Image (cartoon, rainbow, N blue to C red):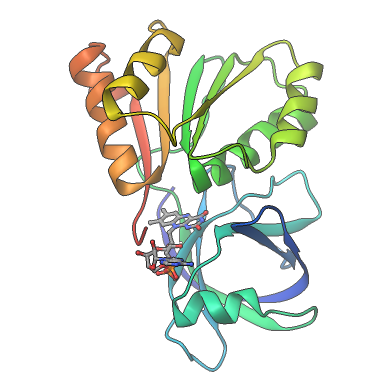
Length: 230
Ligand SMILES: Cc1cc2nc3c(=O)[nH]c(=O)nc-3n(C[C@H](O)[C@H](O)[C@H](O)COP(=O)(O)OP(=O)(O)OC[C@H]3O[C@@H](n4cnc5c(N)ncnc54)[C@H](O)[C@@H]3O)c2cc1C
């Protein structure tokens, strides 16, 4: 998809704290706005204060009635205002799109590797699979520093109902990089068609190197969503 400059109004429906460190904002679905799981939006406040254009993956699926973004609580002025949103507050999308073909492909097996809040676009993908009874094989490997895996309840329900979805969790807090990689490598299906990595920049970079250098996965089969700012 070509990234698009737009001015799409958003109305807040609700907000939800989903762990000690994460929250979601739910917006009414703007009329005519079409997106695919894996797409991101650039969010702005209408008065431009603080300056916006901050990128968030859509954690909602197009099969749902509303749009949502999910983020790690933070201390920047933008995050502080985002965290204090109330129903009926308004924002706007200045751009939306997708980088490097970050979409699941029909009839292709995929390994999704999430680091912390990198689960957001994968929640969108798997929710859409669940709602459309999609038969593609998907393996999700979800790394988080502690046991507070966001969306774990939903993921476990979807995994139970769809035999083609498999979810594995790794708690990274006590693990050196070497130990983390030792756990990760045997979990990854080496014969998948595509590999998707999402999360903080350093995690995405190190996981991409692991796939290419240690596992011999071809770079053309890897898609990344690298979250700057963390
Ligand atoms: C394609 C793409 C998709 C993205 N999708 C998402 C997404 O779905 N969800 C998401 O959360 N981000 C996403 N991001 C990243 C997002 O755009 C921001 O860069 C990120 O959320 C950081 O936000 P912030 O700059 O407001 O900083 P903050 O979160 O406020 O952080 C600023 C700095 O302070 C540190 N910090 C934050 N909180 C604390 C604290 N309590 N105590 C001490 N230090 C703290 C942070 O580590 C960081 O170094 C995405 C980025 C891209 C490019």
